[in-house]
Length: 405
Image (cartoon, rainbow, N blue to C red; front, top):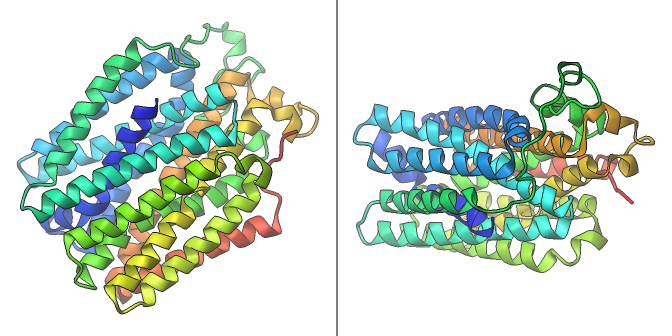
């Protein structure tokens, strides 16, 4: 699972650096690139939401191994695609299947850790470690005149190997769910699919406000990863190595923050952690958007990446914890009956929140790209700062994060 998180991060790290090259390869505007990525990730989010029930029924071992194998085929196809049409189709397919990988691997950790935030944060730190490695390798490839597609081919090879290893591993939740009688398959306590795409479980556990905050922070994180380096490389004339270097340093900080904070997040609490990190990300984005020097803007990017780092794992940990121990976070366990049995409920909530996160990734690139075409990319980054600040304010004003005993 550690290598799965790292490989998944490596893919997004290569994308962060190669985005401008893909844009030029396909002859797209900022808005066009944002729409292509948005359509891809939107489909991936829908698939991720449906993955929870599938993972529960098939077992995590089979579902994750299948997702990794299919995803590897799509990524390898992207690295070899000769034309624009084929490239676009395979790119969309890779993002769609990536949603299943994301939901399945977070479900495994959620079941194994029972929503423990320190464990969730450590695994997401491995995602950052993979992202900085992928970004660094891609930056070096571009600086030496090689193709960014080589790094995508390496990710595909790693996914094939991981699929084979996962297929024979005894992962948490690897046993398929027993097939229920027809009378227990829809709308009952025994329902292994609590609500369409997991939203029934989210509502029953009173996690809708937390899901909204997650949407906002994921929007900011997706916008930073897609447009942060591109802004340095295009508007401030930073080279591929400088832009990739800023991203690598930022991901190093994110990994370090997640790993070093893992021991303390239980004491600090998810709510305070998200508020502080979203505020820091907003400040870093303001610096990047207003700075005229590439070095100072790169520093702002580093701060923004490090600031937003804890939001995703902390939200996922809070949601997993509420799904694992609903009676301690809701009214006397009544939500537990509505949301379904433990394993199916947790898988459904993880799938639904993964979909929410992907919707943020959809909105982030598209929103910033659209604003960039109208008023400039700096204004788009400033808008991301406003979204991060709003998410922090909502958490300060509400009790959206359950606090299990």
